[in-house]
Amino acid sequence: MPTDLTEYNFKDLLKRYRDGTDAVSALRLVNQPPPDGLVRLLRNHVDVPIVDAEEIRLRRAFDQLLSFYSLMEVASLGALVPVRLPDDFVHESLKCLQTPAVRYYHEQAYPLTLPVLFRLRLERKWNESEEPSAQAQSFCYQFLELHDMLNGSESAQTFLWLLEDGIVNGQDLSDALLVALNDPQILFTHLQKPPPQQEPVDRSLHGMGTFMDFCVALDDLLQQVRDWERLQSAFWHYYAYWFRNLASRVGSRFRPALKALSRWQEFAEAEDAHAAHDYFERVNAATKRLVTGHFGARLDNVVARLLGETRRINMLRRDGMA
Amino acid sequence: MNHTLPRELGHGVGTRAYWSLAPSGHLVVFVHGFNGKAAGTWIDFPRVLTAERACQGCDFVFYGYDGLYTEAYLSGTQLFKFIDALVTPPLTVLEKSLSPFPSRPNGFRFKKLTLVAHSLGAIVSRQALIEHYRNTRQWAEQIELVLFAPAHMGASLLPLLTEAFTGVAAMAAPLMSLLRFKFQVLRDLDPESKLLDKLKDDSERAILAGCSYMKAKKVLVTPKDRVVQNVRFLEDATPDIIEGATHSTICKPRADFSKPASELLKVLCPQI
Image (cartoon, rainbow over all chains, first blue to last red; front, side):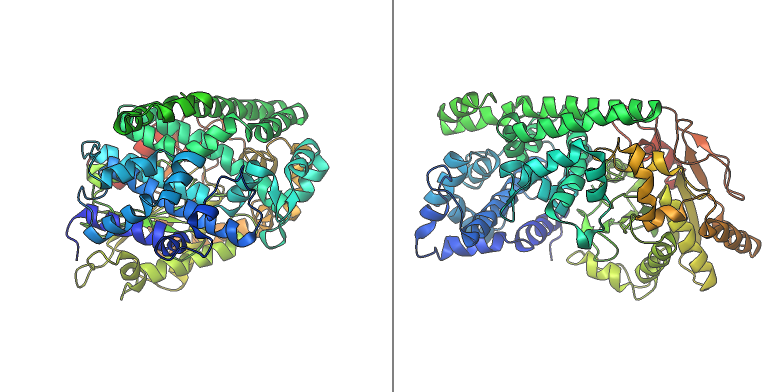
């Protein structure tokens, strides 16, 4: 029986965010690779498109596993988990994070900072964390609240999936979303459906609201945690994939949607319009700050220093993030 | 830190708990409002409360329910059943959720229960307390009610819909009023609704029978509230005003807006 709160926290994180998700399928694949090998499965979709449903499922499993390792890095930085993690966990995690195909997937094809840092931590090349304090740890609790608010919402996940490539269940929904946001009658039709009857476009409309609330709340958290720079940077990096995309191709779907929404103010009564104006101002200001990449710089620099390379920084510069 | 990471309880909709490692027997249950969420409505409270030394012994539960399509009365009865299962020995819900943490000591009982509710959550919580009275339960030696912008006198539907659907439907005002026929709970929030009349009658009866916990210990309101009428309910405490908040933001403390949290702390930890 663990005796220290950090040991309990480690078990909680493991149980909920790894063993309680499809991440375990990805772990199994690392130990028993598919016949085609992991290299093919974890390729860049630009090279060979991903269309097979089973491939999509397995790649999502790897995304969940990498999200879990990212969460472990956040927890390590926030001193939520023990400095020394159990040997079997370290061994198993290193085996995964050092697998060439997995490294290619999260270091080159779709660069993520936190799993790299966590690998370096497990390899004992990186060991920094915030001074244990109730305040720093309570910020981590809030981060988990936000995590569960977004990840636990099926409608928000549908919206994010739609933002990424517009295709849900084989249907391009980005146009349908914009049509709904531009027409009160259509929007009304979508919003009134109870959950069992909701189609992806109905869910994505509800999800857009959750995502906007999330952006405002995350931005607020990042402002509050500014005195803990590594933690602040890690919180941002956990969602860097989305914010980088918002700054580029995904933004081409999100911005028109937001613009369509803000036009509704014209139809509202003065007080409602004022409240809505304030809300959209907050969403706009928050998303502008979140997509700049400013918050991520601290840990990007750490990775560049530790890896002794400028490739990552160059890549980020290319994306307009550094 | 003295609390677990958030644990899903498998009751209601996404209900989650932060359990204390040194429990004092004080259980605090948060109940969200119309279209709220267990994780979302009270977004800053876990951070504020778990970091507060005086709250280290409190257990915090963020209860979730369907605040759109289910009648408020039914949501209230479900909340009653949930709390009843949580606090009544042998405390199986608690013990199952605590694992692998050490069990609570033998004979552990909750001594105090604080229900903290926002908007529609006030109706749901009062309904749960009426069930507590009707079923002659003994949840704790002390039960208290803290209300943020309570909707127990009804709500103006259009502003409520506008605020509840912050982003997506915020501006669909001309059509949103039609949604009342789709969202069952909105009929309950009509100031003329039978549910509200009955809630008042039942509460009055319970107070007359000596259930002082039916009188809210603290009521927090905002002058900018366009959703609910700031009218006193029976013998509730005189309301405290939170300036600069709206109906939705009154229960959302931020870095530059600590009043919602500090007012709640005054009730939870009067010693600070």
